[in-house]
Length: 266
Image (cartoon, rainbow, N blue to C red; front, side, top):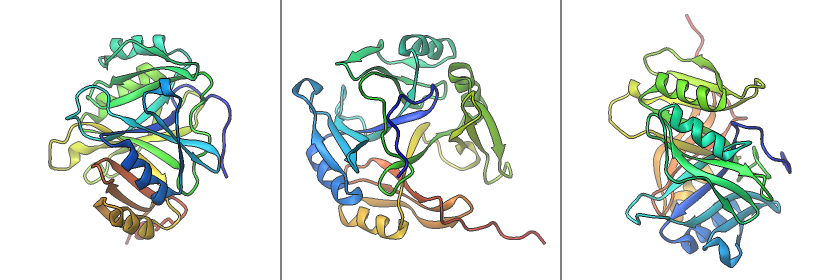
């Protein structure tokens, strides 16, 4: 069981949480889907719920803040040693900070921002809450990736803010993807070039949760009231599917250990 107790290195996707209209319904949905023990936060947390897996923090669930007409969404938080300094870098690199960084009781300091391509993400400076305490485990998050139609611009933005470097791959026609690395060289997430495909969807961050059995998890997600956005597929990156939860929030299911090799070249 991969676990962590300390703050995550700067630039690492360190936490995910869900903003929905009905947190109580989301509690029921994800408790059944992932086996989470979802506990109430303190009164001053404003209805924020903490999901535990194996007794360790796995994700958060809370009510939408601001405009209630905004879609339900999973938000990826990137670790920062200094949330205020990181927020300044976001603005300097062409992004937008939606609110000045603020303290969340004694658990950390945070803000929510958008990158230069418009994708929203959180900035988390750890306090008493370091971030995810469990990962790369059935029912825990395992990967976070940015989907954007401004692939090169987004890479430049995150390089300026977090010092990321990139390992690019793909044929440039059906796939253009970059794994991003922290300054220490550890690969911790990806960026997908959505401009290779039709449509004008806005940029967004997608959270992937590990599922030992992707087909069974996809079936359960729909039985609980969700829907399939991409059916289970065997790929060189793992067995994967994308679903929408019962309140419309998109997330991925993947088993990176079930890898299908690419076809051999003639």
